[in-house]
Image 1 (cartoon, rainbow, N blue to C red):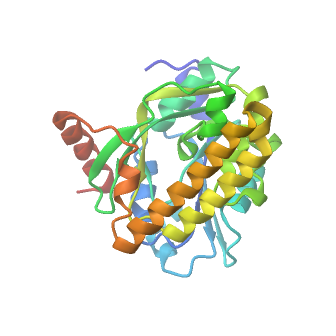
Image 2 (cartoon, rainbow, N blue to C red):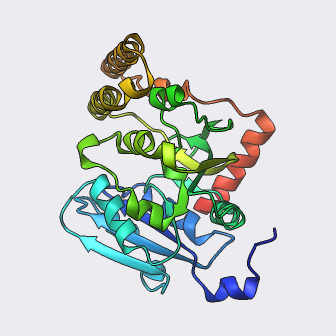
Length: 298
């Protein structure tokens, strides 16, 4: 792959910071960190923040990582939540670009290389996301989604979240100028896209560069998400949708919440996120599973 900057310059300049807050991720954080350490592009920085975990998540951080000069570790005993940490990371980011990541996910080996290269070649772009693979709690491949281009139709943006949140890499200045709003807990990304799409340049790499873990859904959290989505629809919906459309979309959030409540009662709520995926052909599934095994060290 060719970079817009020569290798010597890249080796001398850190261009991207990975922001990784974690809270009670003792079962998955080690895999997340391994996927970062195995990136093909190595001149990154990592801001790793313990958001007041009450389990032994911090024990997943090896001495090798703690001693790595690329890593800044903040061990905070207070749980301040994702929105606070995302804004904190943006404020601390020392590089021109910032990459999002969740502590129960993984990234494919060339994720940073591919997205950073895209941004360097397209300086007019603010954020670039990607398609993603989904896995279960046993690190088994479930499916793929986000293979289509993002839509800039306002009615589409209001109806669904515009970007795959955890997959984005973008200009640090954009994150600093467009902070997450804590009033929209659990739909903070949805609100951010609705607020900023009209003056921002978002793009997608239509290839899976990110691996999202979708285990057993917390029904209470999902219902809270739907409640916040209704708030977003009430604030931004009337700007782009007629009254009947806004009511229809709000009604859908109640239906979704009810479906999760029912399936949660039956203990089968994990089947609902799978409906958003496309299935991989068998050889592709085998290839992705092999890649994951390489990341986690199996």
